[in-house]
Length: 191
Image (cartoon, rainbow, N blue to C red):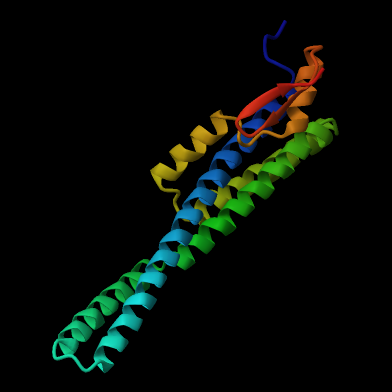
């Protein structure tokens, strides 16, 4: 008698690994994208303000205006160079696109193991290999997730930020309990 689990369970377990990997990757990319978007906004605003002040002081009639204008112009050039070098808007876009692709994969995997995995074993294995291929391709093509963004994603996932309310209700119903309705910051038990 074999102690190995049925092939269908192994297929679903592997699909859930792909789903979990995709969840962490999508959230990590979204956090990194949000950060780069903020960096781009701040650097852009600083550059705009410094440019306006430099232009205004260059046109003023005070003697020190040329020194102030020159100093601010150099500062504007430095911040502009930083923006050009780091390209925060492009990085934000790359992370957002990768996050969306991982999120799409996560959703497709969930549908596979919740609905489609009951198809014949050969077809389920083919579909699982296809989903794994998509994950591998995303891992190769996506920009790297910074460690801090991955850690923030991990904490958010552990705090159940990524759970669907319906999944909590289904799990509660399986345990013969009343569903728990989660709202940010508190849980309210439905009676």
